[in-house]
Length: 307
Length: 279
Image (cartoon, rainbow over all chains, first blue to last red; front, side, top):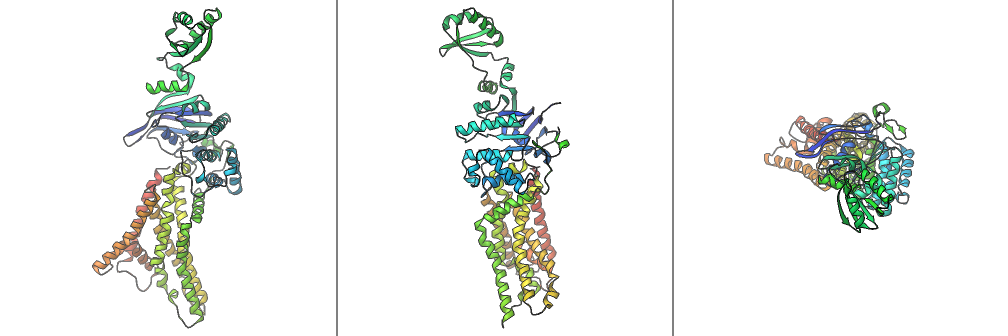
């Protein structure tokens, strides 16, 4: 049986004549998944559809087998930290989280106790009795996470959770999000900052112009891009001699010198690495450093968006 | 496991589904109302006439001066459409009521509500009751206080015996004023994310209907066509409810009531359209 909590099937969404999403399908299971895309890619629309805040124009969204738009029970399993700038005026952080818990049916001291615990868990214990509208941007992000987690949801939606946070705060938040995924929650994190998402998870959904470009782990997505040769950068003791020997290999499509080393382009990286290993063992090539150059998220993203 | 098998399930396991999901919304808004300093003056002002009437009744009961207005039925029929009280209600609805939804639209707080087990109906009902509660307090409490003071300060129990059937009418009058102000005010609040704009629109609509109705009355030299003034229609309908010997306007009370009903239907339609967008 599939352990997918969220199933999105052939979903399209348009606003008047503007198509925000087109034929998007994917499933999400436990763990952290990054939702990436440039501005206007349709990330916010997709998050709203997953949270039951919008109804698709075509297709279906199912959360645990139910349509989150029409089912209060399904939405009870969602925790969302939206791109929210304003908080209810006059409320302290603690009162805000308590109020959000009351919407889930928590009552009296149980709600207050739970809210206090959550506020402490995101590092806002000292500021819990301060007005939320006076919080810094980083503190607001923490507060949003606290209210999203307050009712112990199965599915978490975090929209740009690291915006406005300082570097130590970012690290802390990334660790927190990874821990939530490791607990077995399904976490969908939207961002347009690639290295931040890369630090949280290798699993991705890549959106561009309303279309889902790719879904899966970065390395797997890269392997599927057969039209693009893999790029490996090498630094060797005698670069010219090593380059000449490697150029003779049938796996090597192109080779060019770059940054005190050279860049090899190959469509069969495993086979090339075997050959390289054999030559290194035979003393023909003295490899000092080897680095895949386009197996990171940035490269994959650039390839897909360019395509 | 599908959620429909587990019911309302969280990571830690099933929880009972919350009932009366609009109650936390009322609570949040009333807390906000309590905090709003700018509303203290209209609240005090709204209770001032009531205190004046009670003091006058007391003076009347101990001295030569006879003050018997609150002992007559028409007094209650027109109490809340007297300019002073009407302006107080206008101030409260403008400063508090028109911001109820506009503020959430501006701060994107609707995402917080509707990603939870709260439906559009829960939200609108919660906001309606959050506005209706202070309005009911402002309308019913002064009227019941004046009636109670009049009954207690009379030398015998004759007035109480005669006037106790007025109580359901007072309640009906307070409910009418509250409903007629609450629902259109909230409908106006859905029009914009800018609370100032919503407030301005509400003042213009509120005053325009009465100013235009007064103009029509002046032009025709009778009030047969001034039923579209909000205060006029409310006052005439209240008079109909209380059935006093003389009605303040020349148009049929049914016409005034029909105008108010049309206004409510229009406002409810707007609220229904708004809530339909969210679950």
